[in-house]
Length: 423
Image 1 (cartoon, helix red, strand yellow):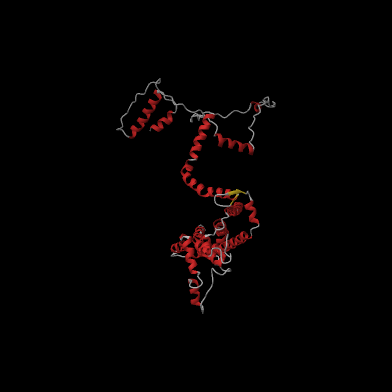
Image 2 (cartoon, rainbow, N blue to C red):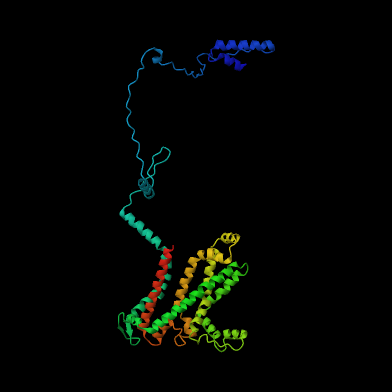
């Protein structure tokens, strides 16, 4: 009833109209239900009534007066020239790069906003403040060096001081231990015409070549075998690494006994498999002495090379081997196409270390053959030792040592340069 009432009333909220409407509505319901009482409401006065604003209907605009007047010409308003709007120029690629560089170096520009406080600019740093900042950065950077200083001093004292002292001695000629004469580079000039030196140098190169050939690929094959082992791989690593931990002097004495021509273990084992007594002079034959020493050196240094190869093999993803197996690749194909390319830097490192180690062999040669027989196993290290302490030619021995050191350093620099070019 209230909905019908207000639909009929509309916007007219006067007291008489609303009261009449209510009476008519109540009387109509009274006829249907006589028990319904007639309620008269007292409405507020017209001054206190609230008028609800009604949105006016949008009228359709009338036709243009130019269309209403027949035969009249259309009047055109004069054209107004608008001011030209200058659009911002597009930044070039170089300008954008410089803009980003300024932002990275000096920070973003300050942007004013009602919801964000402006960033306070950094105070101007004076020259004195810059010096303080540099000093604190320097002190912070050398903090680690202070901790390493004792070790660095020990290294310099036992490494660089002997090198400098040896170079100083190489410039002098010693008549006795206490008397010497400055000769400049005469000791280095003697090296060129010394046939014994070049013979020992060739022996060192030969020994180093045998060590590289056996000491590089034998640990590689053993590493492949240990890598494929499911059980006992750790034990095999320990067994191969034990010779490296053995001191050089006891190991050389042990192998000298095993190489003995009369009662050595190696000849005894060979005699067990062959008819008659085997008497091979492993250390007394000039053709076998250098090779026998190289075998001992390879035996001693196989352990660390094997561990390096094992570390490289473990870095190769297993899925490469699985994919190769699914493709029907053989073991040789896997080694050629997967393992060798992946281990190329590792192999180069092992070759470099073996060359340097083979050129510096001294203990094994000195104990097992002392350069014999007939100088067939004389190497650079034993040659320097004999010149300095047997023939007391200390100045020349120091010159040979410095010259040999320069050769090794030059080889190392070439290797590092090649490795740097390969990335």
